[in-house]
Length: 141
Image 1 (cartoon, rainbow, N blue to C red):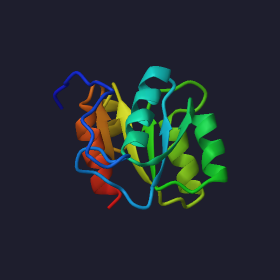
Image 2 (image 1 turned 90 degrees about the vertical axis):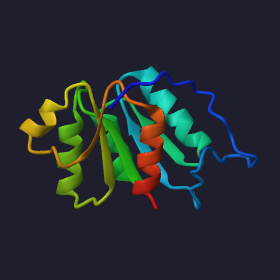
Image 3 (image 1 turned 120 degrees about the horizontal axis):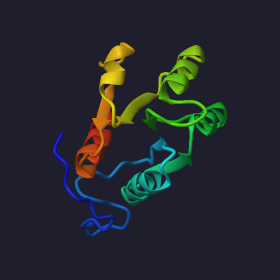
Image 4 (image 1 turned 60 degrees about the vertical axis):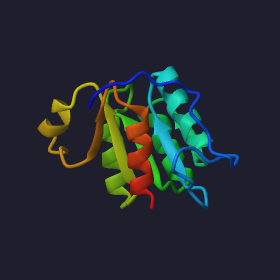
């Protein structure tokens, strides 16, 4: 995917909380998991501006703690993280029969193919934020 500079200040529609062509209703719950604080906060900010309910986890351990307490419609998870990585989070979700949709974010797409997870929705860093928002809208409708 081509990379385009992203500004956190996106054009808004006339209605508060609506952004671009996406206007989820009721709010869908999304968990954003990334140990890189800047990336995690930018994604979370844009999702909140789009009207989603967002929780943030800084690694796989925190992600599992959230998944134990709350039902999410989507998990957006960086692949390489300290403590537990995305593969550990996916294993946990599978062991609990969670059917939550997942988007993986990685700088190393070959690692997904090696693990037999090439079929999952994945965005390779750096990615276009508009493409991510569009994909989320498709997955949650």
